[in-house]
Amino acid sequence: PNGEDLLVGHTTWDDFGKMTRVFKYYTFILPGSDAVARRIGFSSYPGCVSSTDSFYMMDSGLAAMDTTLEVLNTRLYDRVPDFPANPRVPNFLHVMAINRMAATASAWTSMYANGAGGVPSAQWVVVDYNQFEPGRTLSDNTLRLVEQVPGLTYQADMTGLLRTRGYWASYNRPYSAEVRQFSGHSSAEEMYGSLYSFADSPRATIFKHLAPAVRSMFGMRHVMNRNVYPNENVLPGTPGHAISARMDLDEENPLPNGGIDAKVVNRCLFRRLQCQAISGPTHDDVPVFRWTAANGDDLFPRWPHLGLPDVWNFRWVHVTPARLLPNAADTC
Image 1 (tube, rainbow, N blue to C red):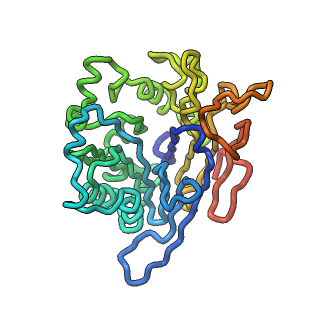
Image 2 (cartoon, rainbow, N blue to C red):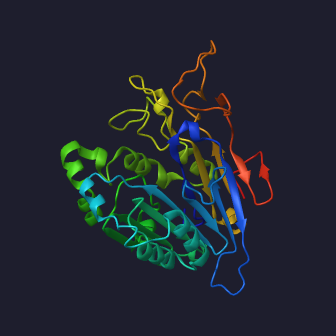
Image 3 (cartoon, rainbow, N blue to C red):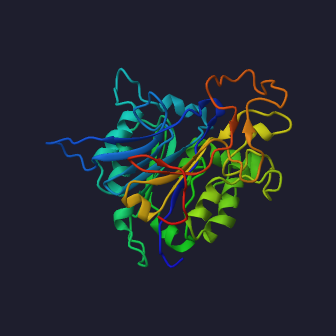
């Protein structure tokens, strides 16, 4: 309330067999370069040099994250640049370079727009904590958006919406009318209704009701881990249409897929390059996920999960560059 804090959160969706997680910090001192960020913190996996979740915190003052955009108009793939003719830096390396080089949110989105080829298609949200002062009106370009699909890129300053609504949410639906039309989402909304809508899709509706009421880190954690199936009042009512999906709870076709984590940060934590995080499928208001039944039978034998814990009842932790702390408090 009254612009006292600026909270950022991100929930990764993926197969539950990919829940071997590592939160990483890279500190690179690059003398003679134009690098702005020395230290980057990000959620990741063993063997990955980037996030792949696409959740980054930079000591330059920027936070960057994305949600993927589905290309429903498959003809767009003909617009993907031919690599031998137009070689490009792989996207994950491109993003890591931008994280080092960008000093502002607008610089970040411009660098991404100028260098990416539309694959993977994504909506990136970049927050510039340098522009935020508690209790003051948000400065322009505090929140920047860049959307990209093959053949089309859109970027804009979304700070005005953040000022008026009090929140911005990203949930795998294009915002730009042009990107929506180009990627096939407008046609899908005409055919199938609000499921493909930016304003009225299930997660958009949930955010619309919950996000303006968030007043603390506790409230932010609750929203980013939200799944109250079967009691969510959105249509269609499935465990997949939640902020943190639990497709294993689907009665007709249970699959070990959905939200596999949540990360939240406020201004105080961000200035220390710290965050709060939880690993595994949400279990706030739904049963704890487990790989085996009570009799020991594997519930999902076709899904590899060697070495993963059986029961996923982990709690929130406080992530710092030095160590993980077991308790995530409501204050910094």
